[in-house]
Image 1 (cartoon, one colour):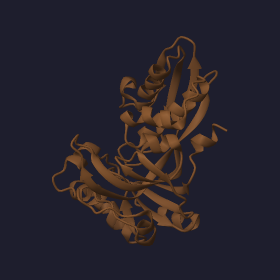
Image 2 (cartoon, helix red, strand yellow):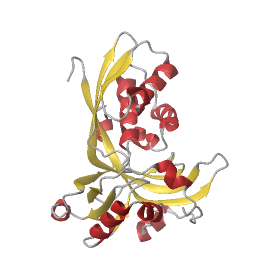
Image 3 (spheres, helix red, strand yellow):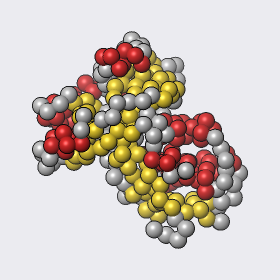
Length: 280
């Protein structure tokens, strides 16, 4: 930790289902999904500075600082508010990249929340969510900080309370390109709209799962393996898969059997983001 640095959590998310309901004229896809926050977190170290510079001396080795969403988020907030302050940002990753867990978006959202506080910008969550949306469709849910029913491109959010659950999350060692999945000719794009009540009664599916399964043998193998213990599902458009468990013990028991070539996590479902708890 550097002098003046504060540490901020950036939680992952799971998509409990993901229906693609249409495609807009601008090429973006209309979705219905439920975002479940989980307690698997990256950590963003944030230190305000007087010279206006935005630096990221620590972060993912294969992501140049100028391309990192935390740097882009800081600059977006700087431009929107006219502040003369800057920041040093250090990103410590635990959330796998390209896994569909929203790590980059969450890091960006946490940066917006942290700097809005540390810089004294006093923007509301609606304004921060609008700033974050161009950075990624998942950024607003992390800015708002609650598990949610989502529509549109994922930005129209309705808070929901989800049953207390634990999750086994498996990363099979590959990254998946969201762009490639959504550009795939075989992707279902006409799923009928459902209601929140219908989701709670019958669940749903992930329309992207057949595309990812067909293109990534590692993901298909992980889905088949985990399905031997509990219903398994792909999250988002990434490579991570998950199963829901009623207790931590049940989740730990499955995770202990995960083949060594894959990375596994046991995570608790959250209704409120720990980044928001850091603001209080």
